[in-house]
Amino acid sequence: MAVLAAISGCANGAPPTQIQEHNAMQKSGSRIPAPAVPPVSTGGVRYERVKNGLTAGFDQMGGYLAAYDEASGRQLWTLKVYDNQRVSGKEGDVQDVFFKSMALQADGTLLIENERRARFVVDLKARTSTAAQ
Image 1 (spheres, rainbow, N blue to C red):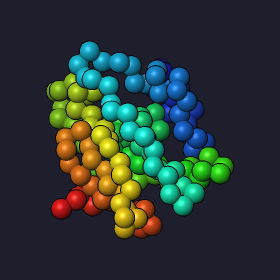
Image 2: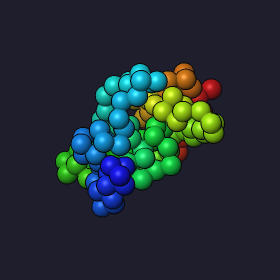
Image 3: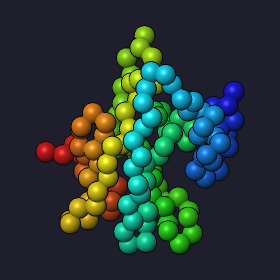
């Protein structure tokens, strides 16, 4: 029930509140908490991981990047950086994969590494993600 309330609370495009995220993402005994990844800012835009994709209305918990206008706080866009396919029959939360780090590169791209050590290059202008070589 808390998940439904959290999703409906985000229908206006606003990011979920801390209470909504807490209710939808209760601590599991099977999984350590997701890494704390600080936002990255450049050119008046703040880029941060979506902490709980399900409460934001997406199809998976982790793997999403959101861009916000720093002056207004308004969300500009979101991008699925990577897919996180779940295996049926296994507990869901232990299969969730979150960002481990984000770093702005000299060429203006964002390098994201996830908990499984997979790395992705996000072209912030084109709003695309590709696996890093």
